[in-house]
Amino acid sequence: MSNPQIENNFSYHAPKPGQPEIYEEIRNKARELAELIDEKCPKSRESSLAMTNLEQSVMWANAAVARN
Image (cartoon, rainbow, N blue to C red; front, side, top):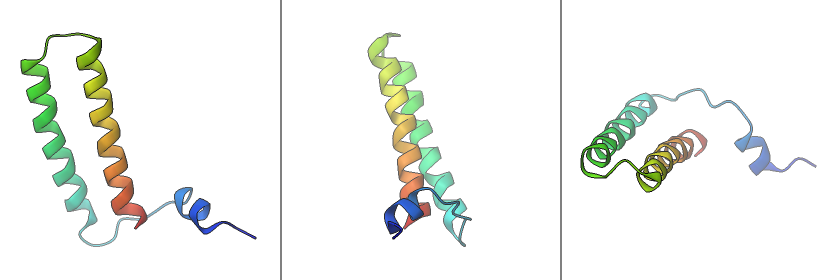
């Protein structure tokens, strides 16, 4: 018997009406924060991790929109 969560998580989710605009809004807000981090934080391992985790946040936020 198939697990519905696995089916959902590993399937293509074509954008529904309105979703591309949500993805763009999420990316734009994240870009604002990325620019602030780049401007205000010293170049360091920590700022690199902040950027990496911000990218992950965008990915997971977009996945939440796509999957649900």
